[in-house]
Length: 521
Image (cartoon, rainbow, N blue to C red; front, top):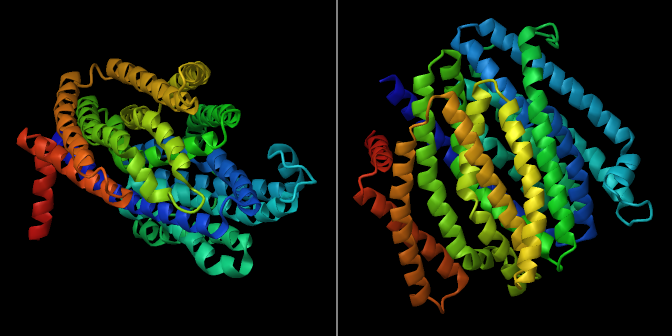
């Protein structure tokens, strides 16, 4: 009963988060289209993007995923042991420390903005965007402080099994930028977009406050450095920060390699990767966010058998969604990209560049999704070192594979930027496999037969889906992309889920019965 309740709790939470993240991804897509229409590939937009990189870096280093992966397991563990006062004292100390640290760093970055732009961003004093980047950066640094506090509140709410509102916050951020593009930019130009970032960050924080107040926690005016729980969180953050830095370094290497290839290669990689991440966020990140508090509670209470069952069920469920998404993106990549982007300066050649990158990125969807879940299992066990160590090795291999695959693709007449995408997918698959092996040894197995059975059933569904999509391509080959892509998604998705229903896959039957129960209510 405990295992069933845990898995059902994860499924309900994951469904809630999935819908909210999908909403945020759609809002982000709309944001991108509106910003591109308003500014195009202009020097002003280059300055905006460069300035935003500074505030994003501050947030990621101080209060990004590193803090969440260390704070949630510790905070949830204290709640599970009914140490509520200690839990809220930890949250208060970290909230104060994060806000103070980010405020000081933001002030320093604003004061030394000319040096940051000149040396860190590599924009020369003679550049037409040098002064503009400085001004935009000083505006957008405000958002780093707001996001830092908001990110901690998201962790507090997730630990209390509150998922819907926190999962909607990225959409609030996108709405702020959309407001800046539509309302402020016509009068303020690119400055309107910068203030849109600040407004979006404010909305991000604002929607969290009512849910936080409902938890009726106590606030303490302390930095918590004398608190052993605070020191424990800081120690856990250390390895995770190294992992974040290595991932960012890997992106820089790929960017440098792509810029040495044919024009448009780097943009093709960027857009292709973002499309893959859009699907991966809806599928895996939503489940990972939902499962983290449950894993943390199970570990805190010493429930290894329950954690093993929850992890196996979660991985099986993620595979059921990630595998058809991977093959669907591969098959529908060209009409999908043409439907979304092919207008104005984005021509058919650009579609081919992006589609080639998406082909190889989408091949890594399953690996990315499995890794997302497994890393949360390690973090729930207060282990940030193992996934970071494996990740560092994988990212090192990624650099080697990038160079080798790019040369291989070029030697056989393929566009070499596809080799960079394949390197990412291959390295991620190896990373996911290593994490699975280590976690399996730690939990004395992860019900591999159950996961393998789910993969086999999903493969049958994917075969049916592929057959239907290819048949639709043959029948509708003269159709426009805005017909070809969505109809292909509907037909392929319908074929996949119909096959799983015919095979009596329990996860799908449970999902349908749950929806029907809600409709009856």
